[in-house]
Image (cartoon, rainbow, N blue to C red; front, side, top):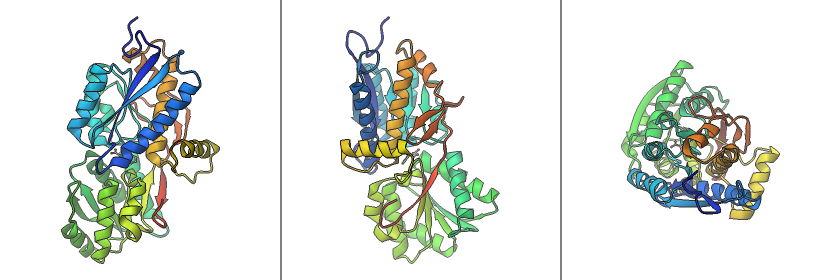
Amino acid sequence: GCQPGATNSNEIVIGHYASMTGSEATFGQSTDNGIKLAVDEVNEAGGIGGKQIRLITYDDKGDAREAGTAVTRLTSKDGVVAVLGEVASGLSLAGAPVCQGAGVPMVTPSSTNPKVTGIGDMIFRVCFIDPFQGSVCAKFAREHEGLKAGKAAILTDQASPYSVGLQEEFEKAFEKLGGKVVSKQTYQGGDQDFSAQLTAIRSSEPDVVFVPGYYTDVGNVALQARKLGLTTTMLGGDGWDSSKLGQIAGSSIEGCFYSNHYSHEDPNPRVQEFIKKYNERHNQTPDGLAALGYDAARILFEAMKRAESLDGKVLAAELSKTKDFDGVTGNISIDGDRNAVKPAVILEMKDGKP
Ligand code: PHE
């Protein structure tokens, strides 16, 4: 048969679209590094069906239109058999319809908004979803010894589907657990001045401030909050996960918490082995994105090995059979909605690091 990307060649081409530059650049860079490690490993072990994997990565600059264009190029010009990406839910929502339309399976390592896999039967993820993440954060806010929050304020990026969705889930869960949301403020990703919102939050006297945003904005929010005398503990979701957060916010983010997919302090040998290999290849400690990129690529390769052909439908059917995969980010099984059911961790910022 004629297989796209696999014809007349001893290689199999896969694509990755990612924010390699822009205000969320570490998301794309870390994910790409995790994927590359997995690609190297499978190729060193002889590839898949005797063919080497070739990865094509396009920078979408964190822009939805660029994301759509990148995926169109991957599926129509490069003939990839599968696409990995994006991190940000808003960008996966731009790329997923292109993959769905082209009949090319897409695996997002880290987009947590439920709508992403709802695009269609070609779209998968290997991370948990935000109804879960929101309830984990709410439970932590209510029950953690140092917080025991009765009142929460929320600061949401209204331009980000991830932020808006996670805010809704947190609010629902927090109130269900008996807490009260005393202030809801919004911003637009990239804003520089948060003083009006932070002043309003300060007067609502919350016990915790939930900030479901991405690290660059969160860093700026933390800096400005402390300048305005708002010293309340801040809590966020996986969007905080970047080595840049501590660099931007310094001591302003000390003692704050966020939910994530993995901790580099997890003693599990599977995790420590990954950290060692990643460190040797990329000379840094992997963040959650790197771990998810690695897991997503490995799950894709396992499905490719099982598949009788690399036709999109056949490969998608194998992806949906993923069960009990022993990932760095936990045990991964793909459910009927093409989502993964997994545990979350809560990380605390200490000396600028999670
Ligand atoms: N979950 C975020 C989103 O859906 C992306 C993200 C995942 C960011 C993991 C950091 C770490 O937009």
